[in-house]
Length: 259
Image (tube, rainbow, N blue to C red; front, side, top):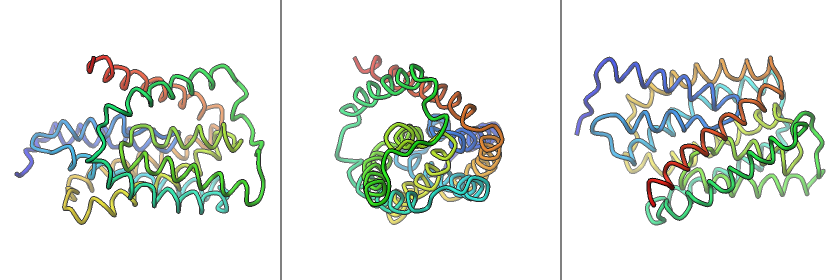
């Protein structure tokens, strides 16, 4: 079934893509904006929206990852194993997406997000500077474990993946918010790629629509990454708290609606 796209719908999708790219580049969570916008397209199926969202998202995360790499220089000995396991986890999560009901996960995610928000607000110095808790192979193994779990979550559901990556890198491994965001972009690129490896053979990606939204996402990602680098970890922390709050409101609304 062909999609019925008018000028106003395309403009809405471009705006949503740019905003999502900016949010993703700073702290993750751009799917809060982009996926709901895609679901509003007449004639699109949920699977097509999810797959097309991954295409647009990977365009944005690629440019923001490169921007962060040039300006922040994230530790590739952390990013490498974390991205590799996240890629594998995302493929597995996408394969399970149709067999596990989302209602089992939403309340759990909501509780975790509330705890994350409370913890971040209660500790004003959290993520201000990097203070790594492990070194060597121990650090890399823990990073790889985080990548596997969050990668599987991204393939399975997805909302707030970048946000979960950032808070894990800050609270578990001990990174400051800015280098955590830089690392998260590399890992998030891998999770989007893993999901696409599953979705593309099934013909779920709407390439024309995805490239339009993805171009806007790419522009937003470039602007967001440069802004985050210029303003530092304090700015990223503020955006992080706002995005987590928005995730709580959205998922809380879903839980209430389902009662």
